[in-house]
Amino acid sequence: MKKIICITMAAMLAGACSSFLDVNPKGEVFDADMFESAEGYEDALYGVYNEVASEEFLFGGYLLWIPEALSWNESISDYMLKPMAEGSWEFANMTTKEKLWAACYTAINHVNNIIAHAEKDSPGRFRYSKLYYGEALALRALLHFELLRIYGAPYWASDSYKAVSIPYVDSYSFAISPYLSWEEAFGRVLDDLKKAESLLGQDEELLPEIRSNSAMGFTDARITHLNLYAVQALMARVYWTMNDMGNAALYALKVIDCGKFRFRPMRAFVQPDNGTLDMDETIFGLYSTEFETRNRSKYQLGTSSSSGFVLASDWNALYNDGSASSGSDYRLNAWFDAGEAKLNKMVNASYYSGGAASYTGSSILGASILRIPEMYYIVAEYYLPSNTMKAAEYMNAVTASRGLDAVVYLNAGLLFRERRKEFYGEGFTWHEMKKMKMSITTDSGAVLDGNLESTWMMPISKDEEDGRNNLEK
Image: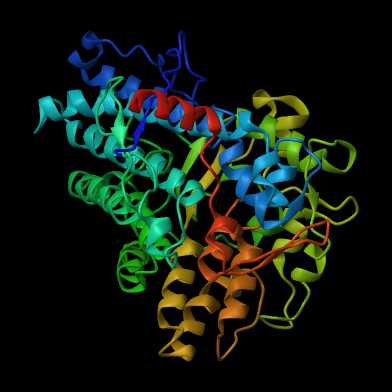
């Protein structure tokens, strides 16, 4: 029987979006007249970026928090996340699963409105028409990919688990869309990204090697947009998730070799500008003050709030285990509060102490979604089976900038630990554990078998299934 989905439409945002530095986008007023000007396209894209950055069930919260909790980098007594982290999907809060699903597809539908108009305008009436079209395609791919990572099967799953994944919605309408197989859904993600890559060539000139937080117009602060290099980095991550390491390394090297991204200097660890995009390392990130506020409640108040995170018991030893070298890891003091066992990495101290007006840093408040270290780790993993010394060179490039001495040979366990250190708090570790079939030991002492597909697939909510079944009748 054909599987279908009922798209839940949320009300369009009325009024203005949160201002982005010197830019004050008008928000989401997605009527036909909006796309009669370049400014209209830009405002529509600003609206969607604001939506995915600020919505609590997208990158403004649970899209990062859920995999972080599932990996047990942080433990939590929150009733929404605790049952998920213990593997008790049947007792997990339905609202969380429903709202994440609905928020993704609502944003996808908003993006599809932009794409529908951009396709009609192709090759474009405006100077940056290709950018508008390319960014919108990349946003659609990103949101579907995030759904696949959480609800979809791992690459190594049996055919029965990969037969059905998620719907890939590519039209702006209330129409229902069929569920696709794992291969079909990933293929559609890659199709959108490849087309986006072909449209974003202007970024070779628009994205400078030395960046600032100045944003006077749409083509400034390109790291806050799904730019050319962000699309290539996302393709590397998609292929990595599929375990197609040849293509993953190919696209990772495109980003590395472009020369526009570098590792942050040591001074950035001595006086860290946490909770911001990194002007050296960020390939793509989202401007958001809501990110700061919500992450403080999760990461900064964790020891005194049942809804906050508490760091895993091994967090300190992780950075002092000597796995990479005898060097002193800059990340430990820069990203953690050792006295109170809190993660500072995700929250900007000057912002939460006095609001946006008090922030005086040289970066952009918000969340980094793609950073250059990930590209080096992907290439290291590609070389690992055939050339451990070459693999070590790529990992050492990252760890040297973190204060660690080089290693000569690399193995999978060491690479996993170094990646966990680098992306602690960013919701990355669970996705790597899923890829590696790593079993999970929970706070209660239960062991979730990493060889079982069901360990790694958040079930679609009952309400969604019931609605789908009603439509099938």
